[in-house]
Amino acid sequence: MSQTFWLAVGLVLILEGLGPLLAPRGWRELISQLSNQDDQTLRRIGGCLVVAGSVIAYLMFSRL
Image 1 (cartoon, rainbow, N blue to C red):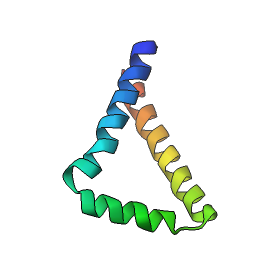
Image 2: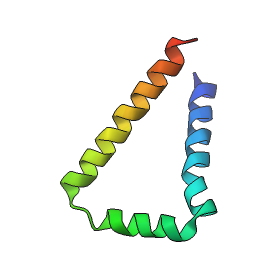
Image 3: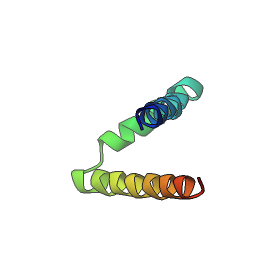
């Protein structure tokens, strides 16, 4: 369980780091646009990301 958790954290860090590494200007613009959104919109975006991540995790672990 602990190894799986740290593997997931490592993969998230890799994916999160790709934006600023490969397209720093575009990433900065995206962050700027996100910071101008109201709280409700950010909650919806966060909720969608959580649901999408949960579905992907379920599909991957159900195949094991």
